[in-house]
Length: 178
Image (cartoon, rainbow, N blue to C red; front, side, top):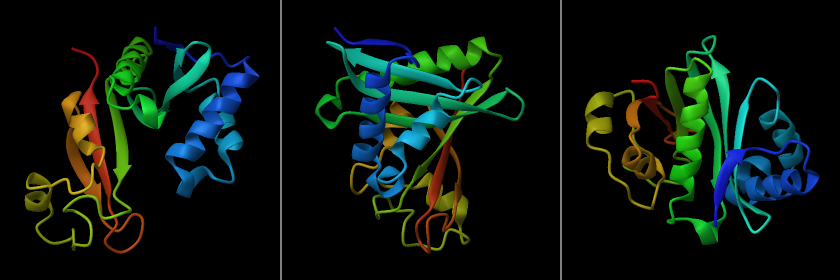
């Protein structure tokens, strides 16, 4: 049985497994600093949720307070590759949304980079006809924006060239209170 609950900050084994998960999911970002990133993720002001099966960490979701506490940035979301497509990410985000709302959060937002040409927003000039391009976005290579749309997030903007020319960051958000 897979359980999602607040991250056990006292468990060095889970912290190490989470750092390894960050490297596996985001090698371009964390291959040399995953343990340091875990220290940040586990900071007192942040929220960290973990998914565990048979005493093995299989997923991690975190949130960073922004704008006081009314908007929180979802960072990161990582699930072991062999567990993807089984609802773990959705469970982690749902638990994170609930915790954000309990702390006074109204909005949970995220940036989902398109560094590898996975959508129609890459390799194009997003300074021209921006809204039309967002409206007509296409997913070419399993970019995660569609996962977030399935769980209620909307594209609210882009940062053109955030990761280099033609490599945008796609911004998505969801209201977590009714």
